[in-house]
Length: 196
Ligand SMILES: [Fe+2]
Image (cartoon, rainbow, N blue to C red; front, side, top):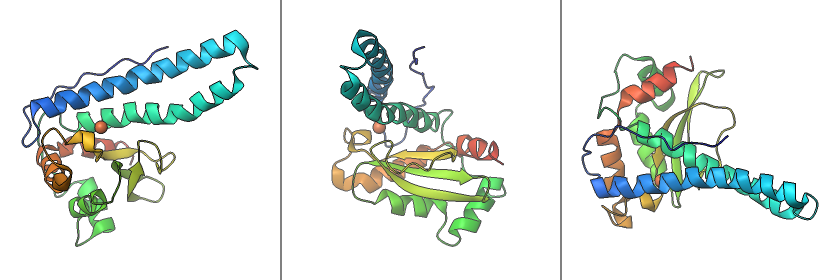
């Protein structure tokens, strides 16, 4: 099987230009391409000489998580802008879970704080259905630090490629503000509600 590039119905975004989004979608397509390429390469190297190519195959397997999570994280990301900005429902189940976990500070302020971490990667909010709580972590690259098995409900790309068409590195905060200005919280709520 091969993975196909998904398309996203994106509205005009506030603070994120069409060019920025186009460049970013192009990078996403690259991840899909490389996921398929790694699977093909592993199969062909094994078929040609499984023993002789064992090191090559092992290194490609190590690389797979980077490409696969690069693909999937961008799908989580772009989906969040579809249908345009929608607020978080104050009385909804996600707002309640967020208040329990992040209290006074609130989920958005907490995500912004984590987004200030140095380095490239993602701020990821997960639901933990067993513990009935949320976790927010900084994932390096696309795959380092992901919480195994927990459903992702929010993904904020903080690689510089996500904003450098529109902002300089020192303006990462402005990009994060733009992300929240365009975020369709109903997508995030739907993901959360599917876990409870
Ligand atoms: Fe990205």
